[in-house]
Image (cartoon, rainbow, N blue to C red; front, side, top):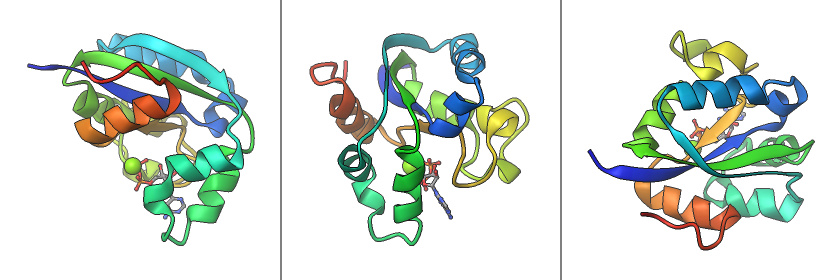
Length: 139
Ligand code: ADP
Ligand code: MG
């Protein structure tokens, strides 16, 4: 299996609810290593740039309002098949459809305020990692 790096964001709903520690514990228990991490309050421009791929979607404005509401924790996770593994640990986008034992099942409120972001492909992992941690690129 290939060692990969992926980008995680613990979103405002989860930071506000003091779930940062519990979410990081689930990430580490899954065997993913935190190799970079920082807390920041996203600007509108940072949120819009990060989610640019969704700019035509009807929920784009709502998503950027949510993501800039309060601080987030961004981190780079490393491990075997890290991209797919973290998507598995996160659970489905809509927490109503998320499997037992996943972060979104445990903590997410709804399809918008769903506690975590994880890159959806190795290519996007490289782009997203570089967005918040310039120089911390793909292995
Ligand atoms: P994922 O985060 O699982 O990769 P998407 O890339 O499809 O999901 O969507 C990005 C984010 O946009 C979601 O995590 C969620 O916060 C928000 N979102 C997605 N679909 C909706 C929706 N129907 N209504 C409101 N917000 C949504
Ligand atoms: Mg996505």
